[in-house]
Structures are given as C-alpha cells and as structure tokens.
Length: 278
Image 1 (tube, rainbow, N blue to C red):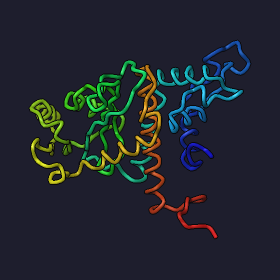
Image 2: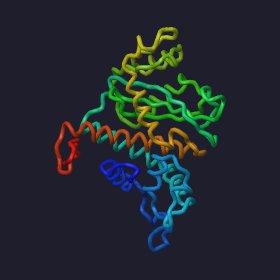
Image 3: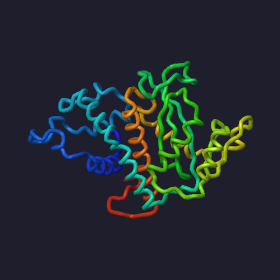
C-alpha cells in the first residue's frame, strides 16, 4: 500500500522533481551526472511512517544515501519552494483568506535531541520540538518556525508571521491575528501594533471555550500535521532537515486541501469521486 494516494503524491513529485538541480551539477564526469539515485518514495515513507532510514532502505537505495539526499535538498530549500508553489496554486484556484491569520505552537517529541530540540515542559523534561504555525482563516499552513520545546510561544510570533509573509507573498494591510492565552503579553501586542495588524488574544484566567474565537483552524492544522510520523517523533538532529520535513508536510496538507475543495468547485478528467463503486 502506498504511503500517500497517487492523486496527492504524483503532482507533488512532479513539482518536487522540477525543483531539483540537473544531475550534471553533481558530477560532470559521470555519464548520469551522479552515482546516487533520487529517492522521493523513501523520503515520503520516512515522513509518513516516521521510520528509521534503515527500515525503509531498499537494494537500490541504501540507508546512507537517503539521509545524504535529504540533507542536500534541505540545504537547497526544496520543501520551502514546494510549499510556496502549493500556496500559489491554492490561492489561484480557491483563494487564500488572509484577513484572518491564526498562530499557535505545538510540542512534539524529539528523542534524539539536535539543533532544534529542548527540554519539554509537558513530557517530564525529555527532549522535545516546538513548531509555531501560522494559518489562514481556513487552516492553510502559511509559515512555520521550529524551536526547542522549552521556548515560549510569544517570542516565536514575529518569526512565524515573517515566515508566513515570505511563503505566501503580499499580506493585506488589515489583518486580524488570532492567538491563544500563551501570547497574552505586552510584547505580543507591541509587535502586532508595529506590524499594523489587529489582534484577538485570549485572556489568561478566562475559560478557553468561551473565547475560542477563530483560531481553532490552526489547531486543526496541527492535528493534520501530526498525522505524519516524522513530525510526531522527530529523530533528526539537523535543523535544516527538521525544517525540510515540516515544510514538506505543510505542502502536502495544502495540496490535500486544494484537491478536496476543488472537487466541489471544478470538474476535470480523472476527477476524484467519493461515490462507492458498484
């Protein structure tokens, strides 16, 4: 059984392959440009299942080739570029709702430590990873920032909004930012004011259901991203590789939302159907 359905994997791989450099750039003297094979299937399996590279290696691709490829692609920013392409396609066909942006953090496990790991306050001080995600009003992931689990949400707000602007492009001047009580601080309000945005921040000491507001969409996005095993239990030590998998998951989440929402708006050859075949 494939790690991802073909309707999701094939368009993602077509764009991913177009972003890769020519093989001749690796080894001009080699007839194929490089000795190592490109390993999209193995990378997707690592992301979805969270398995170690030795478990998903094959006779044609060793457990040493996979991490070398992933590290190279991470340094080139391939997954960030793929995520930008997915956002552009979504904006063109559905439309990003950037008037309401929600930001929230999520803590996951990082048992091997690494550059982006820290003591987790919710897991008895074990090594953990925090990702701060900004989403539009429908939950489309816009920008991601990774940090140690011991980092507070409030200092990550600025870098997360900057990442969202870098990935999504121009952001409207009138933006309302929805935040939970972790951002209830003067520093967050000053930052929002400097950016010219308005903010709806949950107050400390008030029950959360009463002031849930519009930020539930980013919590749903975190839930979708936690479906990928590599994000639930990240064993990568390199910060670039951690960000590679985060943005690859964000690109797949965006593409899945694009396909699902386009199904009810457009018709094309090979359009997926939810009807049960007889």
